[in-house]
Length: 417
Image 1: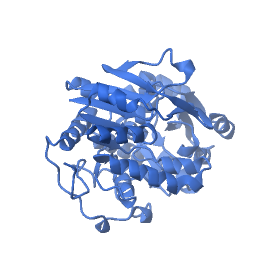
Image 2: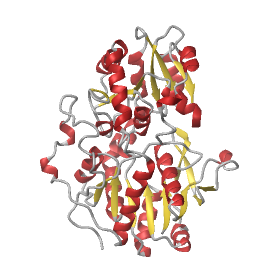
Image 3: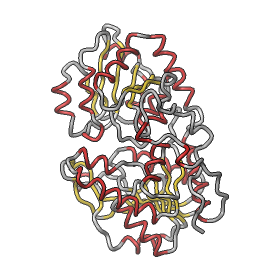
Image 4: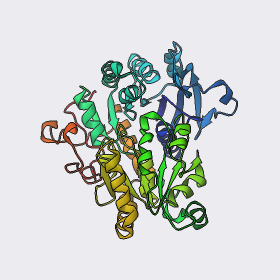
C-alpha cells in the first residue's frame, strides 16, 4: 500500500501531531508499506538540519509562513503544485493529519484524483483561535473544518468527546481511533533517584507538568500550585509562555524542552502529573504519564475524559477552576496510599495501548476506505449518550471504560464506496 501522509506540522516542530505522524510512518515501514510525507517547510534557519526523510519516507516541503504571535510554528500557504506531487507519488490512500490549510488542499486534491482519504481530527483549532484573541472567528473555523472533514472518506477522532464534537458539527463518517504509547520508553523503570534528590532535596512530592508552554494549554493555571506544602512543582517543556510562568512560579523548577531518554526519565521521576488544558482532543502527555506509573490530574473536559478514569487512574477537576485544581493536587500530595493506588492502576490501564496495536487499527481503516476490509459495528445513536456540554466532574464518564474494546466502532450508517 502507498500512503501519502499530509500533516499540518512535522519535524523539527515537535507536538502531538508530529508525534502521531512519526509513529504512523514507523508502523507503515515495519509492515512493508510505502509512504510519502508532505508538510509545511520549517523556518529557514531550521531547514539545514531538518530531516528530509523519516522511517524511509521522503519528506516533501510545502510553502509555509510563521504563525502570528507564535513564530516557531509554521503553517502552510496555498500550493498549486500539491495535486501534481500526489499524482506523481500515486498513493492508494491519503492520510490527513489534523487537516486545516494544507490538509484541506490535500483533501480536495485527493477527491479530484479519485483517491480515498482518511482525516485524523487531532487539534481543536477553533478553540485555540479563541485563546489567541480570535473568538469571533470560531464559528467560521468550525464551518471550514467540518467542510474539510466531510470531503474525506472517513474521519478518525481520538476520544469520544471528539467524536461527539464532530457529529454535532455535521461530520458523519466518524470513528474513534485512539493513540498509542511506547510502553518501553515510558515506563516506571526510568525513575531516577539521583534526579529526584536534586529536584526534591527534602523528600518533597514531585508534581509535574509536561508539554508546550502556550496559551492554548492554559498553563497560567499552574500558578494555583505555587507554595504547596510538602511538594515541588516541576515544569518540562518550552514555549512562548515560559517567561511569564517563570516569574509567576519562582519556586518551580523549569527543565526546559526534553526528548528521548531525558524526557522518559523526567516523567518517571515525578510522583503526580498535572494537566491544565481544556481543549485536548486526547492528551498524549497524560497517557505517557500513566505509562510511566504516575497518578494523573486533569480537567474533566475533552480527551482527558477518556484518558483519566476519575478515582481509578487519576483525578478530574472542574475545568479552569484554580481552587478545584489545587484541591485535587493537594489531596494526592497528602495521601501517599491513594497516590500509589492510582499510579499502579494508571500503568495497568495502558497495557493494550502500544503503537503496534493502534497502527494495525489504522491499517484496518485504510483497507475499509479502499473497499478491501469490513466495516465495524455502529455506536448507539447520539441522543442516547450524555451530551458533551452537560458533563461535570460528578457525571463525567470514566476514561478508558467506555472505549475499551470499541476503538474502531463507527458512528454512521453509510460509508463511501
